[in-house]
Length: 423
Image 1 (cartoon, rainbow, N blue to C red):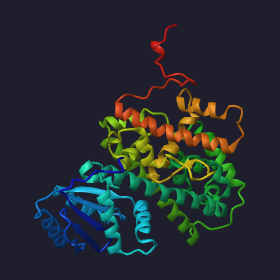
Image 2: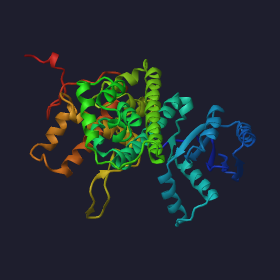
Image 3: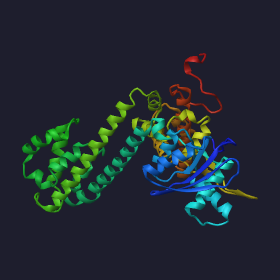
Image 4: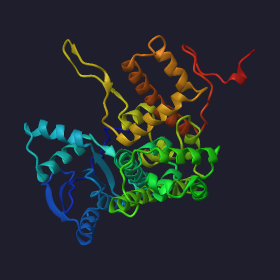
């Protein structure tokens, strides 16, 4: 992203300090007249009045503001639709500029509006991308809702494994397997204690559990193994109709419900993006699956707006930074001044890609770790490098509209298609 943007000398500068219930507005005309201060309440009438006031000036309008939760979204969209130019002010840059201008940490809304106006004047701003106008609002809501439900599902899963099962059926935890599978929760919802299994007898249990376990290799052996496990369980002697067991089943039902909701969101996302070319290109990169591709598109929007991959790395917080003064030089590390969800998504994708075969990510990890296989610190640095590489590749495939090339990098050489090499 371009950090310093020129502003037309004839433009009216409008600085807005956003909050939940009221916005402090500071307007400066280009001819150097007195500034005008307004207080705009978070209501439709006040927002319409502000738009009409700015439109009546018959000059180019440049509006700057700091993102504040989601409270800025409604006003920003209204101003953008009205045809005004919007500039986003970095929260970190605003805080540092305020301290520099006022020689102190004192903070209040009118003072922040003055600082925003100063940053507008010198061009220390970013272009604001409105999700609704950019067409990624639905993707953002899908991605964020999927994350919320996934976190809730993980918390419920851990609660079952670490609290309920140790009390009521500790031995069955070894059959849990993948948390994405619903069959295990369906089984323990029907048979929450060993007594529920042993009281039926082997044949009756096999008949009732057969449809719950689902498609499994050697299903009969698995169900018999579960019966044998229940027969020798050390669980607490709790009756099936006890209140504690009803609470256990309630948590299991919550977990199954979250799994169904997560699967439904994934189906909606895949149907929505089935014909999206950028989505298809991202899914062909090793380690990037449907949800990771959805997150990248939702958080970054159109990656072509980043003219160079270094701008995209900085947007993700994957750029390198060093603290240096005089003869002192600190460690070079990630700045992490960027989108945390994108950074985490590329990190997870790099982890998956490094475990797959025949791709440049695994090859690069091997070269980093050559001779230092047990060095945890070196591996962490290598995975950080792979994360940045994953972001660069994602930017490259979308910007050039070419598929990921799965052949392996070689040190000191350019990538070449094996089919083009002379035997």
